[in-house]
Length: 84
Image (cartoon, rainbow, N blue to C red; front, side, top):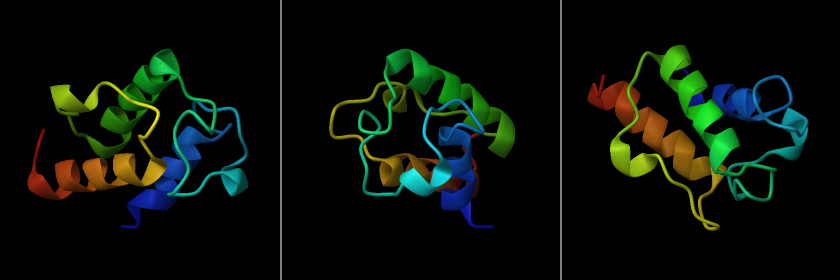
């Protein structure tokens, strides 16, 4: 399963974001694509539901350096690492 495209869709205007999925890439920061802490918490809920995971507590805050790819790697670790 390709996780990045699914995450980008959830981050887009089809999920809880504001941009079209074509405007989102792994190297963009969450702040660049319109995410703040509240919108990020909405994303966390969507990710947990979509992938049947529980995000670790240390992943519940974002900084200005948090990138889309960082979230994809985290979800991948949760999915394949069995954090649930």
